[in-house]
Image (cartoon, rainbow, N blue to C red; front, side, top):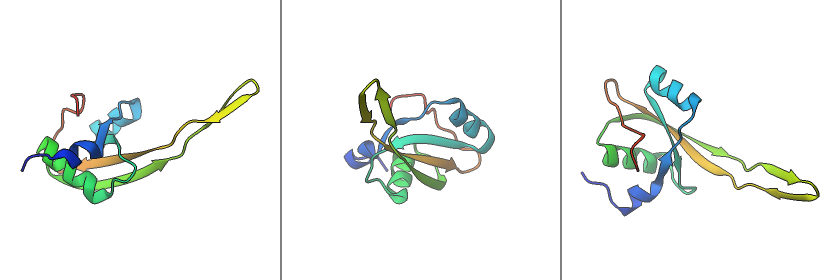
Length: 99
């Protein structure tokens, strides 16, 4: 089954942090920044079609934006949505490649 346009717009890019690398090594979990309207089912379908792996579990988290201030000027950074995807035993993704 090949990926379609909606699948490519669901996953925006992998989150590359020290914490995400630890989750990858310990629990076979991968972290992606996803579209705001993406559901767990959308993320699971997109990962399975794009990377051709079996997804065991998906957790979706809404990260709120931060208040920022520089002197008397203040503003707010935008929030985002990320997904933590656990793969089946023995499956891997080269998440450093372009999505």
